[in-house]
Amino acid sequence: MQKSDHFDGVKFFNPTGANGQPMSALPKLFRTPQARWPTHVEVTRRELPPVADASAVVTFIGHSTWLIQTGAGNLLTDPMYSRRAGPFNLLGPRRVRDPAVAFEALPPISVVLLSHNHYDHCDLPTLRRLAKRFNPVVITPIGNAALVKSTGIGRVEERDWWEKVQLSWLDVTLTPAQHFSARGPFDRNRALWCGFGIEIRTARLYFAGDTGYGPFFRDIRERLGTTDLALLPIGAYEPRWFMKDIHMNPAEAVQAHIDLEAARSLAMHYGTFQLTPEAIDEPLRALDEARRSRNVPEAQFRGLQFGESLRLV
Image (cartoon, rainbow, N blue to C red; front, side, top):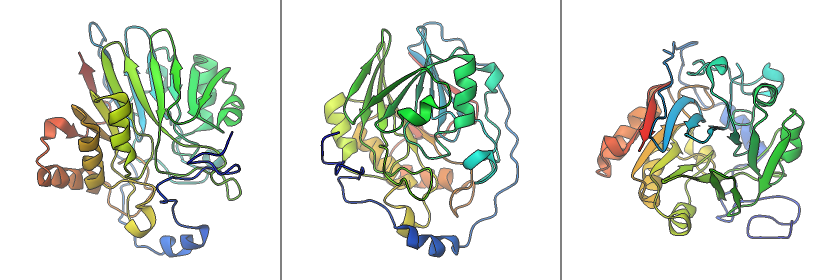
């Protein structure tokens, strides 16, 4: 790659200057008191609704994993079916909610959108299962192709911000996000991170991936137009001194919804893995408070039940 406003020739960075805390800050983070989460929360699995004449049917599987069904093909975002978000499925936070759609119940998956390489978003065991069962196309930002192909995925479309992947039934534009990448202590920011603008028939969707708040949400609106449905992260935001650069809190997610001029937004990245100190129900409570303070109706920005679906006509 040539040097750019987010690549210095060796590593990627956020052009906003909000590039997160150094590794030396981790001991202070680990001393932060944590709310107690339940060890397990039961999920009621539901039948997937038919697509019929809908432009898309969007189902919340959990964390940042969404199933997007269309009449022409189906997508998964940041597919994560493992018990732990960490190396070898042995380390890292343990999930407290099972995936709300069983892996065996997934319809044929044509495309996977993979926003970045963190373990809770890029789960190699899940990608291996998808490779064996469906062999989908994976769309991901620069620097992630080799990792993805190591799972047996045959086709990886790797792009930079604002570049597009066009399939016969789907256009996907990689969009800026404010985050970072790493699989271990020595590869920080060697791969890029992103969100995705998704065009399916008459519907325009946006999947934010993992991100802090930044001015790029307005840029996305200006470049890609208004959004019919935005999927926005609201969890893993405390303590703010550490997380502000890389994870939005619910109030910032509401501002992102406003910046995008989204007709509707749905919340994600909460209630599955305890990544940060806040309580399991705090993100949704704070989202309600933030909506009311900005006069955003609940119908415009809410959280689905795990396993619940939304039809886009």
